Image 1 (cartoon, rainbow, N blue to C red):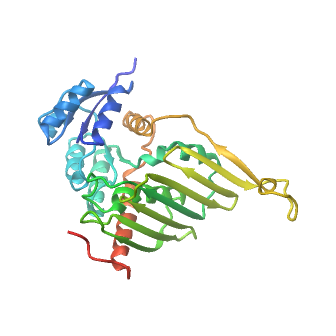
Image 2: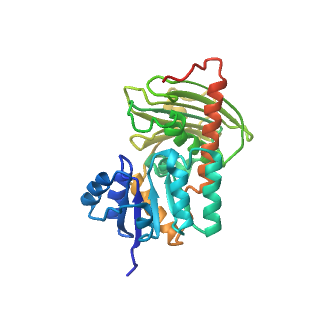
Image 3: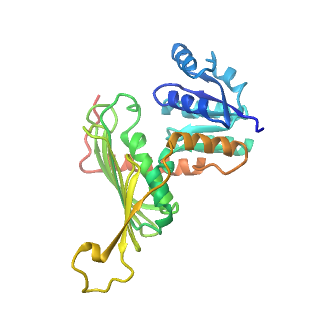
Length: 326
């Protein structure tokens, strides 16, 4: 019988609470404790999932062989470094850190200790993306749209680091980590002291182009990804997990056919139903056990962060830029 990996959660707010809930249900893991600077909240969540609330971070690190970190972004580096320096592998919620220098420090600490450092870019586990994998063939033009209603949570960073970074990570993943050669962007601060709306156009050294829009002041919640590649077009609804792949029929000849369906073959994209967060946490446990590589490495998390910060800087250089509110 496999011994369950002892794990813990640092930060049990809106997102960390879900980490704790899922880890408590994983067969491969044993949730031995949680820690939050709000001890009452830690005790409440611990009671919900049947584990202990630790009074400080070191007390939790004494008990675990892996930890997930879901604290506010400005605290990512301090918490992550403390865990890694104690020899504890880390699953860090996105973004990896607040700055590239902090990301580099986390990567270096993990490397020195031979430890796993995984970044929580959860869209890598999205059902629609999993279903699309057999049909991906070097997308050349990518469009993403990510809209969400306003919530105070997450406004400690710009919408680019809060929401758009999900899509920037996917773009880097889908383009094979190609170098971004040009970044143009515009955006506005509307309800917080940081950007709440942003649009970016990114050109890559391999010729691919990505257009990304993110807003946290929308009345609707939308997560869409469209991929155009030489062999066809993929339309993915990341919110529902549905998608379709359309390509020219192999037997079609120019000048023939009466309708679009005579020319284009439509393939519905289907993947097994699964909770993305559960898949992410399970993959981390497997990585710590040495059963697989981490899905999103520290280096990949750094690349997404670096591109997100370039987008944020480009907004400030845009002719449409306006002073932030506050």
